[in-house]
Image (cartoon, rainbow, N blue to C red; front, side, top):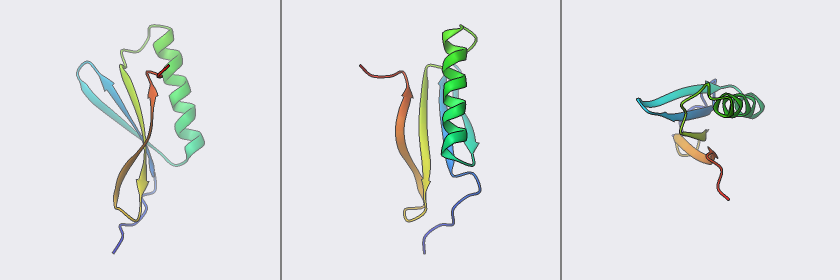
Length: 75
């Protein structure tokens, strides 16, 4: 039986010097607003984030699936 959809099916995983930090979001727009805000903090030198991974919960598979690596952006 597939796992139920969590109330916050979007997740950001931040790679920082001390390890990983996770935030969960209710919608795709909310998730990407946070990505934009974090990129602004990185550009301003206010964040030590090295990588931002965007994931979404997959109900059929019952696990988090990679949507994209939002930072650093590949050329």
